[in-house]
Length: 563
Image 1 (tube, one colour):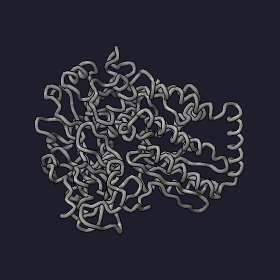
Image 2 (image 1 turned 180 degrees about the vertical axis):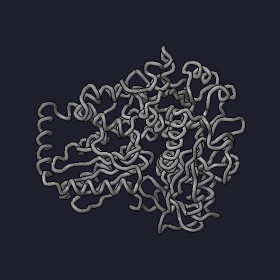
Image 3 (image 1 turned 45 degrees about the vertical axis):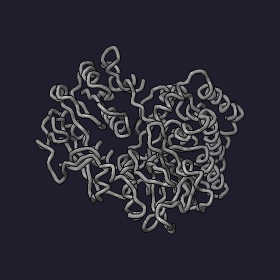
Image 4 (image 1 turned 60 degrees about the vertical axis):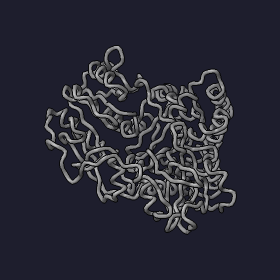
């Protein structure tokens, strides 16, 4: 069965569905929604049985949906229609929300319903709900519908999208505006959460308008409404009519402005603002012989300062006597490597790229050299590029089901990458598999990571169950009678590896290639980074995704499988 994805961008939901459908044995190809004529061409080339639209911003042309069954993932409950569905659900404090798989028709989101799921809402950012609840529900809907179609049942569940939801317009600009003098911090937090990711909530700070992201209540902070009353890490606390709100990231309006830590954009206004230690992105605790070092950086981007903060916390943790240390990333993301927005904003992006990759390497090296204990990388959220190789610095990598990995750098202007990947990856999976993993440019699920050797243990998908399984397994490892033998074997292996080829040699070789990416004549990395940060639409679908554009229309390699 041949499935064509039509999507505005190959986002996290599209990647999860791509992974799940390929693993289920379906032939999958992707066409980005660039122009209707290109979509028509893709349909002619691929001859899909079904078109799935995981993430669209425009209507599918009638001459396409009248020829091929087109199923659209709508992030709303049955009956909900229109854009910004999840934004509205957060703004209006809906207790239950859902995903509806709707067949394309002339009226937007009004066609036959092929599958639906509902879930309880939680207090979280829109982007977090989208990556978690919406993605899980959408995956279940698509797999259900495709499974029925593959079995010969092409009958929708309902002839029209009717239910508790209703048709709503785009969220108006004024509903995304924050007014510190008229709003409580809790009211403002709901607006920021509903606008997080895109387009951001509007706020005026120090006489300048910004888009605000990454917010949380600032307990114990207060002051004149609209004033900056505290700072912590990269965040600032803004006073509201009742309480204050931490705002972690800001963006100046305009197409050329990246999202940055709030303190970066407000630096000139912070001289007299008190600094607090309230918002550390890193924390440490101990339970039953296990150290748990938890970290969570916004969207998985790790600046030079973030890398150093985590390295110092790691060094403090290994000074403790715990024989098992769990390096636990957040549920939203584990890590996506270096912080491209901070790099883009730097006076010299090349210099900041160099500083950032060296800070990341310092962190990875500290983890590798911790030879007096076992380190577990607990990957509970998606990971990409250098973030994947950060996890491989641990002795074992435990992954939560449903996590998506992008273990390659090539799409960022053929970036070579560092993080000691030339040492860590072949040691984990072998030279041949290492070449396949880094060259494929395709998202990978936990099943494939497990088969390739990137994953040592699988954790349940549900958050509470994942944490329980992680804690239980880590404590069992700490109590295992052969723990000392395993640590001794690790120490001997590291010493033998260092004798054969020092870690410094791997680093020097990788950085020599990275220097050419950053400072060489080929500007591909800088162009790709600029396009990524400023969300410049692609002019064509990458050949790795659009397998229908291969000479055989994707019939030989149409599943998008790795060689």
